[in-house]
Amino acid sequence: MGRRIAVVLFNLGGPDGPDAVRPFLKNLFSDPAIITAPAPVRWFLARLISTLRAKSARANYAKMGGGSPLLPETEKQARALEAALAARPDMAGAEIRAFPAMRYWHPLVEEAAAAVKAWQPDETVLLPLYPQFSTTTTRSSLDAWQRAGGGEARVICCYPDLPGFTDAHAASVREAWEAAGSPLPVRVLWSAHGLPQKVVDAGDPYQRQVEETVASIIPLLPEGMEHQICYQSRVGPLQWIGPATEDAITQAGTDKVGVIVSPIAFVSEHIETLVELDEEYRELADELGVPFYLRAPALGTRPAFIEALAGLVSTSLGAADRVIAARTGTCKVQCPACPRTCTA
Image 1 (cartoon, rainbow, N blue to C red):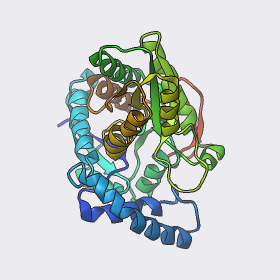
Image 2 (image 1 turned 45 degrees about the horizontal axis):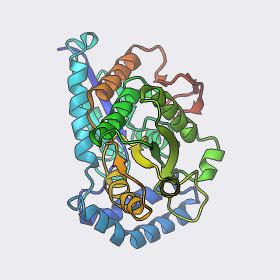
Image 3 (image 1 turned 60 degrees about the horizontal axis):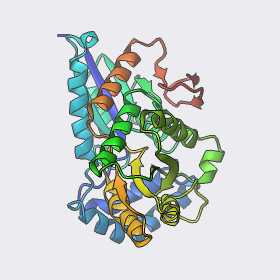
Image 4 (image 1 turned 135 degrees about the horizontal axis):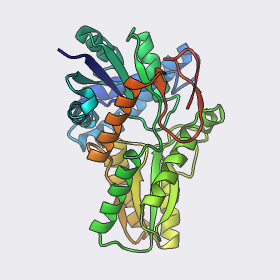
């Protein structure tokens, strides 16, 4: 029997049915990485927000069968990654298993940590399905892993401009455009989940890494396309990074240019893509007279993306450092899985 390698796939998670919507939201807004208020205030706000938002959220999840498709999509990615790793010569003889670890609903990070420990791997690699690092996503999941006693592991911090990942995004945009007849003029709206401005001002590298991702993809696309980064899913009264996706769509209506919306920070289809992008923003574009509205699918199990992740896992296992960042720029992020500042 060869060595056992566990790959833990971090993702946000989503409710698996109507009864799970409110507790999912409560878990989300109880995270100190999301709401930074003192614990008693945060818990009160989490109960309040989850109660107020539960009805509308259930209605949106009902459009997808009552629950989020995020876990089934992540399971597909896990199985595809296992197959891609098993096919690599440097993994010959290894027993490989990928474990989804969801931050806010089952299987929670704590459950995944217990499952990994029970399997007794020789090596564990933590692989966030958040290509761009943020304290609100990757950092939060790593903190949860530590609290759960997940044990020593190798960590892939981020991969915003990883070849294969960027190739897959370019192919998704190009295919959506060509399927519509390659219409011009066209503006690609690179829509990422937003963050409060104060989070970025405090040093979170997410916005900069989103910009790095887009800068790496643009040369892979046909000339003549316009490009704009925008941010979706704003909630609450705080100032958020921008421009907002709805404002970018409004501008496209004014400019009479068609759009292709690409979920640049999401690697799986879920409520923000299937409802917010496919329904709400499409309706807005129609109302504003945008000439055409196309949506590039999330990456899912695209071979180039999965192969890129498999390469990352392989690189991580052979690296001298236990924390790696797959990016061409320079970042300094204090990773809770590492006793030093990771510079890559």
